[in-house]
Length: 396
Image 1: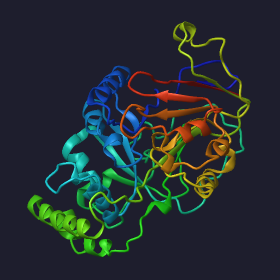
Image 2: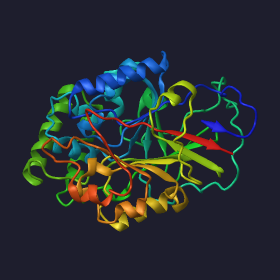
Image 3: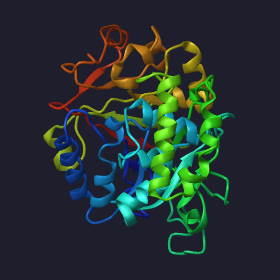
């Protein structure tokens, strides 16, 4: 909700709807229920942005269902080279004949095969090797309708087109559905809100066994061969993987983090996370928590923040002024100790720390030491039985 100090008026365009990850290891019904609930709000319209943090099943198991039931204008996912994607697929135990394996070979072809017209474009986020976009210190004006809203000749989609050969799989008539977001770029909505993804460049694993060159020799059959040729190549590569890395080898997995926050200065960014009757009826209540600069969120997926250097890299890319705005922080990897370091909570310093996990399952997430670190930063458990929602009100 945005208050610019002027008389209220209708929004220049409809709601901007977005989803970060769509999957679960706790049961398919949880995902289906969430998708059905979202569908009732979308009223036949596609969501604007679906962001996939990474390629593990508990984060993507509902993607095809969401695209078929609702659809997305843009599917955003982190770019990783072909050999790295195959390592992630093999690590999860996928076989050459599994339909899902195509996602790791060619994500766009997989989405076309499984979801057809359920998406308009795939936006690959390139590794965040450079500085992020500058932090705006200029006041944000009242949002106006985009000039290109009804002009198909003007590019309005986030990212930039790719040419043949820029990315694996980007060939022929598929070019128009594939775009890239280079390092240092953000997605800005009506000049008021920005999404800034972070694809940690350090997630690329060391190729000590020559797997990349082995994959390169099969590139043609993997990306342009028929189904049988692709299966034969994947069988050979999986055998190479198992004899060199070993079954179930732990890989340095990519995970796209996502910052979302207001553009420019605001005199007030008020947060409310209650579900009281006043909010449902009149959109306001007495529990608003005033924060001078905090109205941003930071979603980390299964990202690796296991050292101060990891946090410093993320904060440097975002700009510390963005990082200090974060009010709601999704704790990485369901609160696993392997993706955390002691003192991370004090560095992030959120008002609310969200743990998306199932404590009763075998992994035992969140781990006790991670929960203790975030104990004074508003920990919230989100699982099969409990959810969490909040509202942000921006004031000029």
